[in-house]
Image 1 (tube, rainbow, N blue to C red):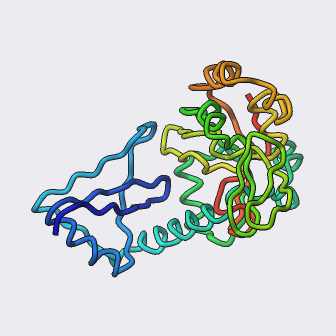
Image 2 (cartoon, rainbow, N blue to C red):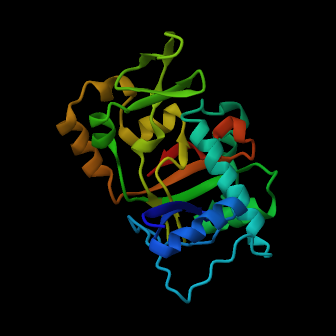
Length: 259
């Protein structure tokens, strides 16, 4: 069999594409039929992750180890996040005042948060994350007319406008700033891929220094200036995590940014 097969592989912090070519592509049909997951932990701040397999390499599908269940949950969270393009921020689940006024300031790393979620998969968490901004995709989203996004009729809706017309039902849909504007963020332990954070309206204003109305008044040059100022800034986020996939689509919810 000729050609190649692309496999999506997940771990707790990112996804990568594994391309199999030539004879190795035949094995892809075994792996997809097995519906398995393979662990691959990329280094923080890498723009692309490449996996290399040789004739002596072995990939264990559905390995009988505790991490297998966690990887299955990670894949399910990613699928639900893809389906929930830009859900409304779950304001009622978290309290910024509670976190900011608490005498116990819980500062997590990304890896520590992952461990807590694994240990208590049904629990809700609130606290702080200190993150380094690696990518800001304002110009890319502007050029693709996806600065704002939403969903209607189980389909994503994008536009460089506050509202857009659903192509299926012709109804007007209110849009929010696209989570993909904020690209990869990292700390000393791991990385969060683009779209992995769900920001509140207040957090977007903290991050961009303006609301969506003012953002839409800018051209590509103005957006690039904002993006250039933000890249490689370190910001502290006040975040919340809910295991309810229907509320946040498996994303970390950012209530506010604090410099």
